[in-house]
Image 1 (cartoon, rainbow, N blue to C red):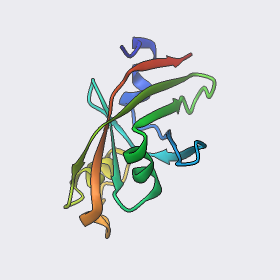
Image 2 (cartoon, helix red, strand yellow):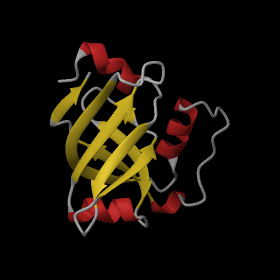
Image 3 (cartoon, rainbow, N blue to C red):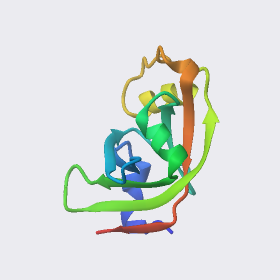
Image 4 (cartoon, helix red, strand yellow):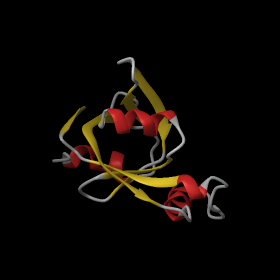
Length: 127
């Protein structure tokens, strides 16, 4: 489903902008680390933040990633939260920290509240 011409945007450690829907219907967008497993997008997050509450209420989510060398080249992936897997040791946070260039990444202080958010890929756009 991911076009070959845009696959690198998800495979490389680019920052994404993740959109979720707030209780009042407005969109919340935040920069996010992520990983692409070939079928789903994966994020680290905590159960104590608004974005997590947004997704519990409305599982719709969208990620936009642009090419840092050519900003008009981008991919938008729309989907929904499939699951939030507990990650009480913060192992996925450490994995992502290393993916994004911090070879010495430690587990965060909020690791007990960490989850791995798994996003479906239902629709893809971009250029």
